[in-house]
Amino acid sequence: MSIAQSDLLCQSCAGQCAFDPAHQGLTCTHCGTRRSLATPWDTQAAAETRYNPGANDATAPALPESIHCHCETCGGEVTFTGPALSTHCPYCDGPVVMTSAAEGFRAMALIPFRVPAEAAPDHIAQWIKGRLCAPNDLSATSSEGRIAGLYAPFWTFDSTEFVRYTATYRRGSGDKARRVRVSGSLQVHFDDMLAPASDHVTPLIRDGILHDFDPRRLRPYRAGYLAGFAAERHRQSVAEGLASNEADKHLLLRNRVKDHVGKPATRVSQMDTDTSGIHYRRILLPVWILHYSYGDKPMKVVVSGIDGRTYGERPFSRMKLLRASAIFAAAAVAFGFLWGYAGAP
Image 1: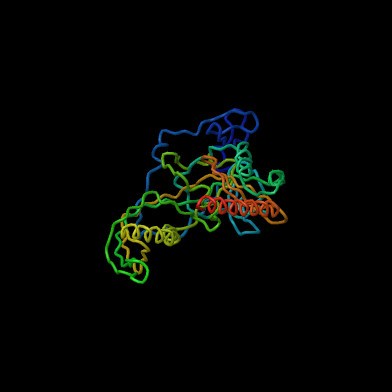
Image 2: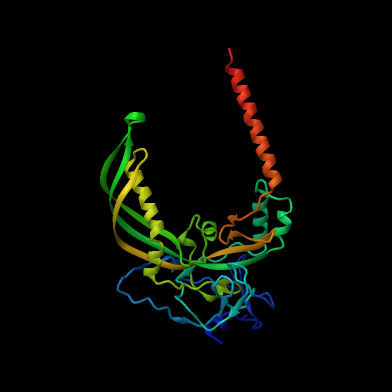
């Protein structure tokens, strides 16, 4: 038995322990004994590492202490530490099969689950209740779905960007409108820019978890926090993580340039960037994912394991959409009539 697995055994009865979000510690699944995971160095979990382009981290080492599984549907690879709660992929709900020891980079830190399993359905039910034009049976149908808890891999990046740009903006209006060319430069500092570290972290999962990131919530990586949950290994090198985040960073910089120009209808025609001061973290962030089907169409609802924020995919009721359209059309006609009547002499 590996050191990580032996650390998950109950000190009272030698039973298996799982992480309990409600108590932020391990709870024995047999006798209920609780054990804290707090350490004196918890506050150091937010420390960042300076990026060294010359460092050789292109090859991920083997990390054999967990159960490694491969999804036969989406190709996702996840690990289970301690008692495996599911034989299905948390990303797509497809079947998973055990494979050989995982290769990947060990996470530096993580934010533990704070939303317990029994609270996730409540957040989902409240989210469904607020959906306009939803089918009447959506709540009942979604309640039959499968909920999986997952630690998804993310990066945080710090960097300083010196940007030289050329842009144009509109001056005047109508027939006198023309575009004016302008050049300039600015410096932008990114702090704790979050980026997915896996292609399986879809925009839905990303948007469900990328809110109000607080590095003070980070804890040092310990197997106990993963006990009873699935997690995806970090497989990207730092260079690969930076490259995958380049498009999002470029879009943010273009918006900063437009704000810097401060003129109407600004278009950025050229942008050259010098990057320095890169620091990073490899982290894991918690998320609950509901998999359900409506009309044979698979859908997901994502609940942040940090604060319960909920996002998802949902069907629409055609009858309710038609009814809503008729109401809006009638309201528009009535408003136009009253407006015309009020303006009549």
